[in-house]
Image 1 (tube, helix red, strand yellow):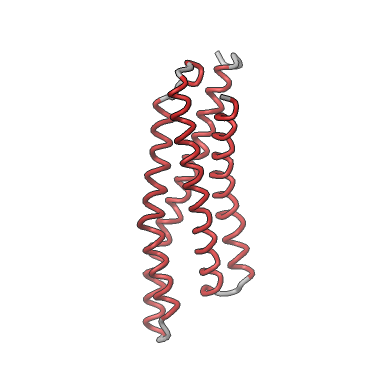
Image 2: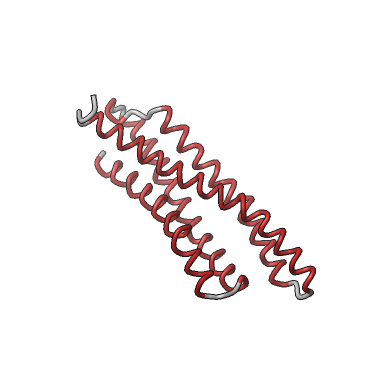
Length: 165
């Protein structure tokens, strides 16, 4: 059970830590260093594609750990409804991002980069930025859900240890 809980915390650390680093450090550094939408945007797109693999891995670890905890039948490891709802929300949002929003944004980005005529390029970038704005907020919601799940797990740990009555 210790291994199971350790892997859950590690997966949540990857989830939240990866999101914070990408949103708070990588994106600003890229656009302040590369000095252009084309190269910087391409780099950020690739960085998020890598992060998506870590998100999938984290969800797999969390799902398997959840199944193991349920299978163990240990009442101290019981799965709460809040934990299930938050994890399901994380999975749905991640699926939405990976299967629909990110591919759409990547296609719009490729179209914007391939266009050479100024008016068409401007229109293509406007379409890209229209989809990037909600994507940014959706990543933030996914990040907040990860933090919320950490809080749920921490509270459960404190209750289990008798620190909270």
